[in-house]
Length: 427
Image (cartoon, rainbow, N blue to C red; front, side, top):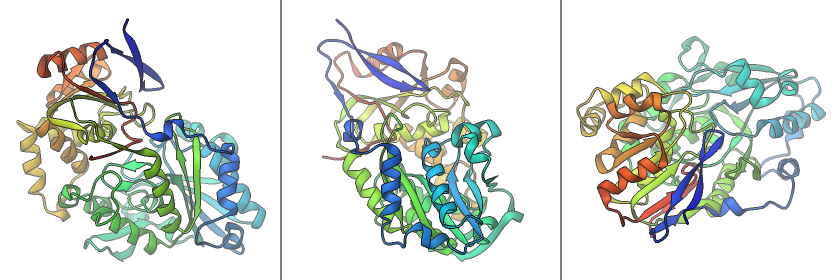
């Protein structure tokens, strides 16, 4: 009898066939079985009632006319339909006259559409506030706030600078080069200018051994992000932690650095697992929305990279309903004769000349130099995937067959059902 292991794919799942006798390990973080004592709403309210290293939110909002809340865009599974109504109610209870603007932290992504905003926030929220998509390329909408530790210039959205109070709303999860998402990341790259983001994501920083999942100490990217939040005067954060089902299991509120640090430590405890080195590693991006393009799928590949044996085959499972995720990203791989060619060109690029999507291409090239990658994704992407020096398969069965053709029928296999929700630690 063949067992079936469900792997997240878009808004559903694909079934991975596991044959008897297979040498299969499954890396599932403790978060998948974590059950909070309270409902999601109670979890959020409890955090707001006991802020970390910060006065309570009602004290901060009193007398503040212009309040800006930085919030994540459509590419992030932040449960804002739960968090924002509670946050807005707290603000309005203490300061009914406050003018509230939601500044959507698009970073370098495209703006969220009206339909995506309605789906993410809910119509009741949108009817109560002003919503503005950050546009990183709009230099006229930015304000200069000084020089970062890296030497880069800090330019951020003027709405944040002109606010009487700046709040960040988001979530904390492992991040493949910033260590963790959330907190300071809402400012950089969330509402920073294109030139600031590009400098922060330069080749030398991405190549740092400290620019890795779950690492904050000595991480040069994180260091710039912290200074950005300080310069922007980010005053308060509300960050949740979610499980693989996108359910709120924890929440922190309060000081942007102290609360974020506490949230990161919680995430580490419930997502860290020991590597299980294997000949074939299968990973996902946890389904929609993070598996909506090839660009985002690189994140799940880094989890596989962390537990792959030398020359292992990586199978990446992602629907990619939005396609590649960027022409620059595609051409940086496809226009070079090999991944090494991509890497050589990127590493020769000075910090101040960093180009769009270079960081994602650099990480993918790093993986491809060491491993064969097979993507299980939409058939319309097959040709593009191959041009980017990867292989493509229409099904998990075919991907496994291709991988075993390289590594042998008895090859060891490690499966990571949610590659973006896990920290793989070396034994």
